Image (tube, rainbow, N blue to C red):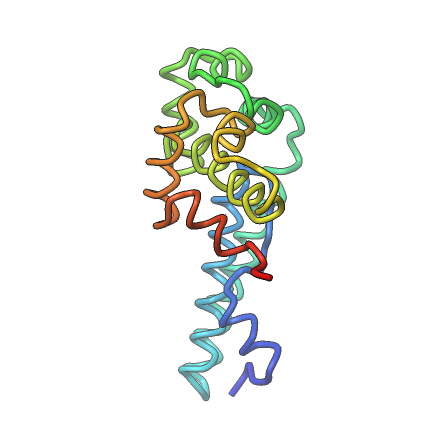
Length: 186
């Protein structure tokens, strides 16, 4: 087989080859990741001439995907990147579609459509997901020292009940039970 060994098996199991904090490029890196997974799978599945052709086809697709991602990253003044930076800087404050559209230099409806096209989700879904991820981090780090209402406030949720419902919907656990998982028992 073309790809063998513990490293490839580990990469294949983890399936997170291209960690990327930039939200605008998260979808693009997932495309590259998908191409690499297909390349590895085809390398394991086929041998001989057919395997060589399949590997070359998937390798070409992977290189093209990486090149597309690189070219997208070369444009520093991307309107979606400005909106993303605004989201990251203001997760603890109310964020409206109008604010995001203004930062990107677009109308709210155009921004929403473009954002959905490049990320695969609505802007508010992404904001809420990032807020829940931030809340999970706070609950893990300060399992003894932080109240659920404070977590909700620090992550931009004005209503702690809405925060709790959304947290449970996204993680499967209410915030108190999630926090309890990380408390050290004496």
